[in-house]
Picture (cartoon, rainbow, N blue to C red):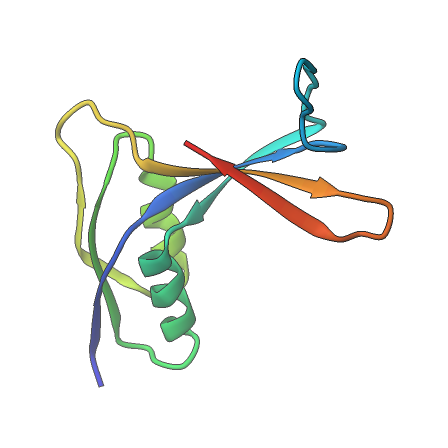
Length: 111
């Protein structure tokens, strides 16, 4: 069976901090990573684990070339994935995971 998934491809920006910033406080992150994300991209990767004929359709920005490679590395056809010709950036999701003493993960999303 061939599966064509139309969906978002985003870049997740992950900042690791000791705690959520309090009013009037400035803190620095202890780590920063960029990773592929977006519900559509995640669905295509999950589908590729159980089906070898997965195609992803979508559009990514000038800064998202690594996303195409990750899809291809997971055996997903990118024939319907288009790189924007405009000088645009990929959509992004910014998350700050707060790790407390008992290792509960909390997220603050901002855009």
